[in-house]
Image 1 (cartoon, rainbow, N blue to C red):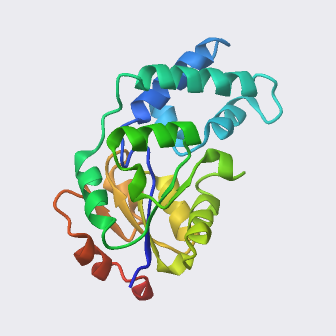
Image 2: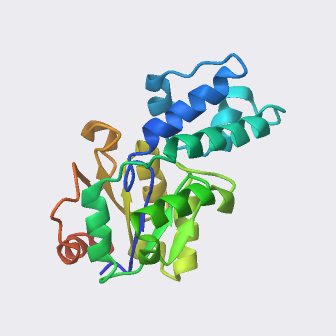
Length: 218
């Protein structure tokens, strides 16, 4: 049986990706750069802010740090009026916390993650929150998920991940974990490497899911 459940946050728990995109676009406009919605979701959606700006400008570019600060400021400004949650995921988390230990492994900053979880009233459901400050290489590198498993004290092979991006699925599988993907961000065909793809967690019984997802079967 699985011994832990690890969630991505943006695009799984909260519908925050449109706000991240807009904040990134506005920050880039300050230096005369553009980023289309299509390119963002195709290439950059799973990256940390640092990785995204370094991918666009190059590592060591002096504009990266100021852009990160400005993007985070813009995001907090946009999110101040509230980020729309995925109600089915939030309800599932409240049920699942009674069954297994839960963790977050996100590319968001710690401030963004803590604020979102507190606002939704589910911060206490998670024993561990791994954020962008905690690792050097983000998804599709397995580092975020391996770190979450390590901090939980659970073998990676006994963890189930819930993701929404193809890069996140790759990270979970590279970590040796079972992965359930939600079609909140990408189409089902783009998430083919996940062990199971669903549109929503609506009405899903965590106990039934954990039986279905016995990592020993994969």
